[in-house]
Image (cartoon, one colour):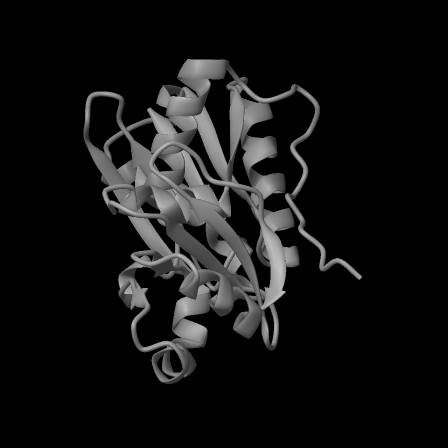
Length: 215
């Protein structure tokens, strides 16, 4: 059983994904106090799944980019629980968790995560991989999307600038609001796939995946 932890954005969550196919998940509002509910949420999730902590075999956590506080809270909780249970922990990038549910899209996927004010983290994704993130003004990021006919735009940046996108580039296809935030269950599934293919991450503590704007 894999425990997935998502705390990188305004909407987070925890999920238990059974290797046999079943899953249980809570979606949680994050914020200044959002991380404080993680222990209680995991306990409630275990009761819902009629499972014990000792049945958790792997912990997967969103490592960002995203909220500075949210990332640190999620990583600290994941590492502390992994150490207590003596199980491996794997990091999944925020952009990977967002791109996974739309891997069926036939063209490129542009992942936008709202950073602050007029900026977004942007990464290009295909069915096989998610590229490196860059911090861009949303208008500059939109110009790059327009250059890729048939691209799909997904993530919290879409919700932040949906009206502006519709005005400036009405031909761009935007995913719905349900794809604005990654699900903890997706983090869990991707973490398990990564563990199966490459083993646990470096035994040293995972670090938040911060992406800084270039000067």
